[in-house]
Length: 97
Image (spheres, rainbow, N blue to C red):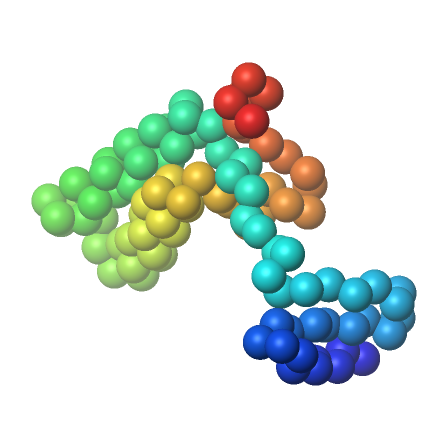
């Protein structure tokens, strides 16, 4: 059960199952994608778009791949992949942290 309280313009989420207090302002998205990963995703997205606009792919396959291409572009821009979180994966170099 989660309860949200408003105090001094900050939101506090209380998770009663584990009794943890998390402030929304403390939640920061840490980049977990390296440069090579970002470039690779962007190139795959560009390839999908070329295939779509040249009518090589169409129908449901085209729609699914275009959604995937958009996701690849967004994750490349923000350097964050939410699917990496549960597995604690990062492709970012240790030197750049």
